[in-house]
Every structure is written in C-alpha cells, then in structure tokens.
Amino acid sequence: MAKRIGGSRRKSRGKLKKNIRNRGKLSLRRFFQELAIGEKVVLNTESSLTDGMYHLRHHGKIGTVKSKIGECYHIQIKDINKIKTLIVHPVHLKKL
Image: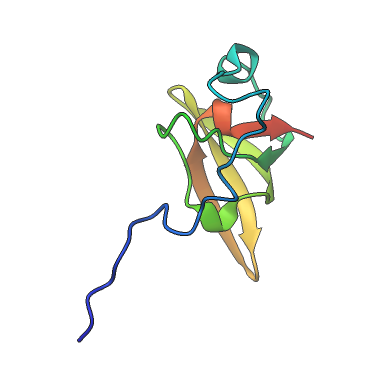
C-alpha cells in the first residue's frame, strides 16, 4: 500500500497566495469583526494565520452564521447535497 504524501495544505499555492500589496499584512478590521447570526459570509482564507482555518476544499463557498463559540463562529455551508457546519475564526470570513 502506498503512503500518502503531503498534508492538509498540499497543492494550495494558488489559493493561499496574497496580492503583492497585502503581503505580510494582517487586516485587524477582519480579525476583530463581529458577525450577526443569520448573516451570509464568504469563506476566504487568511494564509498568514492558521488558527481557526477550515479545510481548503471549502475555500470560496458561501455560508450562513449559525452561532458564536468563543472567538470563532459556526458557519453552515452546503457541500453538494450535505449540510456541513464549520468552526471558523472571523479573520477567514468576508461579509457578503
């Protein structure tokens, strides 16, 4: 049996690449943003911070805020026919 090579961020160079003007910067507005329950958000990864990051297969999906747990939020998305709940830090979320 072959051993799997690579981790969870394998083949993610294009998805996690920042614009040259934003490289090295962390948006404090997005880090401390407050979201209301029922609000629509886009999953948009901040690659410089790995805390509260979701799996990259969900990158770019639209979800709904269900509740808040600590600093993070429960985000409900639809993955093909299944409803999934992710726990995501607000720095990885963008309001619609």
